[in-house]
Length: 121
Image (cartoon, rainbow, N blue to C red):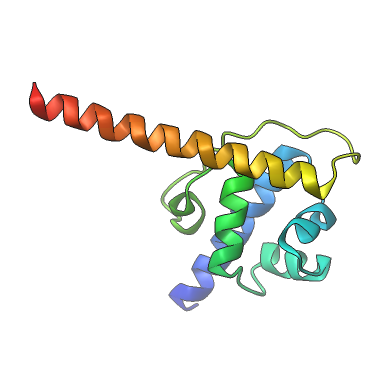
């Protein structure tokens, strides 16, 4: 199996796990990414690859780093909470993704600040 195929399968399995942890359907993810539900199914099975911009959107939605999805050595550590119920609209997912982007940026800034402080000490 080619390295690209292995990465595709790993990314797909991780996305499926995060999607299920969040309580979202493939249809909801498909609407969020503006693709067909069959595309999500194929990507989760490793039959097709997510595009990088789609992975970035999913990272924002689930509150994780891109490296968490593409690196098979890393376990994804999402910020997300479980989104229970089918009443969640696409606009809600977009807002959640925006909030997670802000939270991830805050985590990165705190990490940078800690490194600067440790260097100055």
